Amino acid sequence: MIPAPFDHITPASLDEAIRALNSHGDEAKLLSGGHSLLPMMKLRLANPKLLIDLSRIPGLSGIKQEGDKLAIGALTTHYQIESSELLKEKCPLLPQTARVIGDVQVRNRGTIGGSLAHADPAADLPAAMLALGAELAAKGPEGDRWLKAEDFFLGLMTTALNPAEILTEIRVPVLSGTCGTAYLKAPQQASGFAIVGVAVWLKMDGQICSDIGIGVTGLDAKPFRVRQVEEQLRGKKLAPSLVEEASSQATHGMDPLGDIHASAEFRAHLARLYTARGIQEAVRNARLY
Ligand SMILES: Cc1cc2nc3c(=O)[nH]c(=O)nc-3n(C[C@H](O)[C@H](O)[C@H](O)COP(=O)(O)OP(=O)(O)OC[C@H]3O[C@@H](n4cnc5c(N)ncnc54)[C@H](O)[C@@H]3O)c2cc1C
Image (cartoon, rainbow, N blue to C red):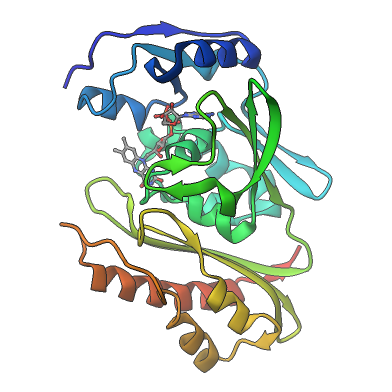
């Protein structure tokens, strides 16, 4: 349980961090909260020669409103998200999701940027990113670019970030109109990671669902957006029978993971059940933003 020897640097700027990452290639790893990377190093599943610690780079942490978006710095911790009054008021799906991550120690250290870049298939925040249609900012030697959440998660612990890119900021919409949100998960009892987690955001126009986003984590090697369910509900009155019927399609075409924590069949069942329940909960808590 002791990592292999490594060097540790604390760059004072993003440019300095990118230069270090670019020049050390595979031998270097970025360090944010360390709550995924350090356990992997202790298990010798990761053996970086150099840790590039992002904690001293100014401007990478915090939550602010910019027009109709909420900008969240990559180093913002799960606890900051869970307790943000701005997010509770303008985009409560993120606090609803962050508050069920691991335990208080994990939430105090772990960051949104680290969680998204790590792309653990059982991580919670990716489901909320997909439901909300979040945009992710990356900065690398070639400059800055924005990625859509749906294009970001490529597979098991694999993202669209290039090797020398740093995830710097996440943007989610400020909710407007009558909206509801919900995050439901079945946690793995020891770690709290999602056996299955379902995030729902929806907008109501009277009795009609005018828009909806649903993200699922834990079921597959990467989180995914359940477009086939969304399409059946958009523009419709959300009668319980329609919600049940549409949610039964949540795992259509998927090949769910099975492991010691849950069989593939049980995961699929949970994903369908939580999709229906998540939609119903979001309808119940819908309010004017
Ligand atoms: C006991 C325990 C329980 C947990 N339970 C849960 C849970 O229930 N739900 C859940 O979602 N998560 C859970 N986690 C994981 C936790 O949320 C981590 O904090 C998160 O996965 C990684 O964030 P971090 O800031 O610690 O990243 P780090 O561990 O520092 O980094 C993780 C990876 O991302 C890379 N990286 C970090 N920051 C950036 C960046 N800005 N740009 C590009 N690459 C970057 C690193 O190089 C590394 O490869 C748990 C962890 C532990 C130890």
